[in-house]
Image (cartoon, rainbow, N blue to C red; front, side, top):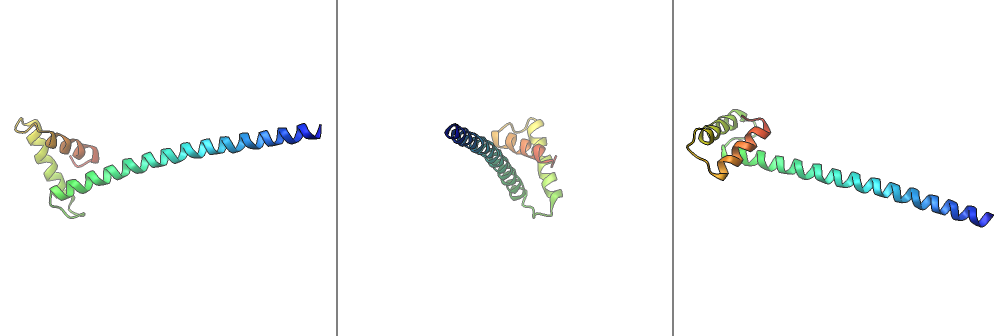
Length: 96
C-alpha cells in the first residue's frame, strides 16, 4: 500500500508541474505577442515622425502630415501602396 501511495503522489506532482508549465508557456507566448505588437506600433510611430520631419513633441506636424496623406489617398491623387499604409498607420495611431 505504501508503494501505491508514493506512485500516486509522484503522478500528482508530475501532473501539477506539467499544468504549471503549460500555463507558463501560454502566458509567455501571449507576452511575446504583445511585445511584438507594441514594437510594431513604435516602429510605425517613429516612421511617421521621421517622414513628417517632426520631433517627439511636435504632434501637430504629424497630424498635418497625416491629413496631407489622407487627402492624397482619398482625393484620388495617389493610390500607391505607401500612401495607403501611411494613412492606415495614421488612423491606427490616432493621428488623423
